[in-house]
Amino acid sequence: MQEQKQRILRSLRLPLKFMAVMWGVFMVEVIFDLDFGAYGVFPREVLGLRGILFAPLVHDNFQHLISNSAPMFVLSFIIMYFYRRVAFRSIMMIYLLTGFAVWLFARKVFHIGASGVVYGLLSFVFWSGIFRRSLKSIILALIVTVLYSGYLGGILPNQEGISWESHLLGALVGVFTAYWYKEEIEADEKAQPPSWEGENSEASFFLNRDVFDKTKAEREAE
Image (cartoon, rainbow, N blue to C red; front, side, top):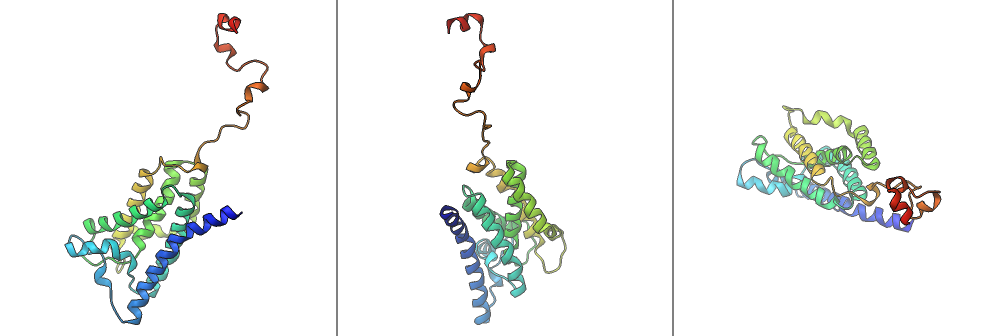
């Protein structure tokens, strides 16, 4: 029980830190009447490259912040808890590659908010179930499908006031990341041998299990 508690606490660290930074940035904007929108990703302009780091931390209003906070927290916790071997690397890859993809391919406007990263995390959890095919990963894929099925419409183009490119490109980055790390499986994803095939299983058989694979001369020699 103590070990499980420690694992939960460790898995909460990164999601809580990210929430603290997101909310801290927003509170600074509100308190000092600032606008950090210019720190978003502005495609194919050198100055817009800084948005790869800063855009997911900047939100237009309170509703925008709330809508991204809950899924960001839940999905990053799921990855930190269930995919510990690749969790930090996966989240950082999704964070950075999503911003870079938006800089390369999106419309020339400022793109802000963590929604692209959210779509990347969601896609990562779902496609990990497809690529890994372990019982755990499949169950997690089904859970996020039920919880966030409504997000599918967010990747459709020409939605006013929404960076649908961030959503679509984030989702594609999530697929790529899930595929990239699909071989780095967790200990609980490894196939376990049947219970009847323990180290001393030969003792429970009247004949050696390979007896019919041997020649008559080999059996007589034994």
